[in-house]
Amino acid sequence: LNLGERSNKSIYFEEDISFLKTIMTQSAIAIQNVNLHRQVVNMEKLSFLGKLSAELAHEIKNPLVTIKTAFEFLMSDQSEQKINEDFRNFVGLALQETNRINDLIKQLLNLGRSLPPKFEWFNINQVIDDTILLLKPSIIEKEIEINDLRGDHQIEIYADRDQLKQVFLNIGQNAIEAMRKGGRLTIEVIPDFGSDESSEENNVYPEKIADNPYLKSSKLTIKISDTGKGMSRDELENIFEPFYTGKISGTGLGLAIVNNIIKEHNGNIKVDSIEGLGTTFTLELPTIRSLTHANEGSSIGC
Image 1 (cartoon, rainbow, N blue to C red):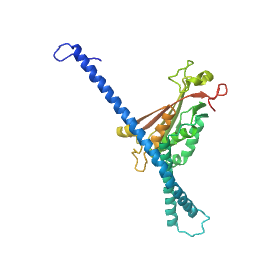
Image 2: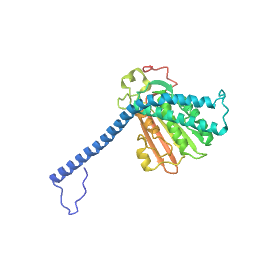
Image 3: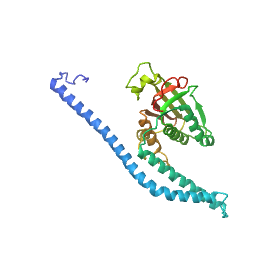
Image 4: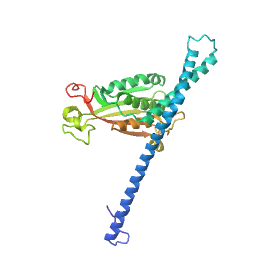
């Protein structure tokens, strides 16, 4: 507690200092309670979404499959009906909307379930390559340049392959949508294999360190940057809130799912953005090893 000089030059008495300490303590408790309340509200939201999505999934998905099958048949060459071009366009549009509803149901289920990660060792660069391939049509359409700064690092990470692919897809899609034609998407992977001294604070699996020397305080930083429109301060503050979106057609679920997945991996996520210049997502994930030495250490529950 640092106190400046009083305006009347008089000294602070013990009662004054005690009173100020009490105010500061109560203020700290109030701030902590606000943060806890926010966490509880978010947990209640996710719990409600889980129950709601489970009930909706059964009621919506069955008729949705029937509708989708009918539309696909009408669009196929096997359909004996002669349909004009306008009708075919409407059927194609209806099929797109059916797929969009199906994707929304999947997102709701993923957000509400909070499924625990299925940990395994895998090459993180392979998953990033697969993600870029999935985003390729949009990248080509918008003439986006890929600035690949991953270098020659061959790294294995102990994580859930499918969940991390979902993270990269959601962030990548947001980046592409935020950019006009001719934008640039930059991907950087920075490994930190840590020190030789094990640390329970810096590792999620301290009990396994003795069996595997490549887990000591290791972490991986992944940066995904775009040259898009950037985000306002309000958007940055609410970016991970379920159903919050700055897009006209967005659901507001993609980045909420990303945030949940990273937390389930005991990682960190940070977003830096400047309006008019672009956005950078920085992901920090624990527990990696070099593929050069991968066969020398023991695996963890693989």
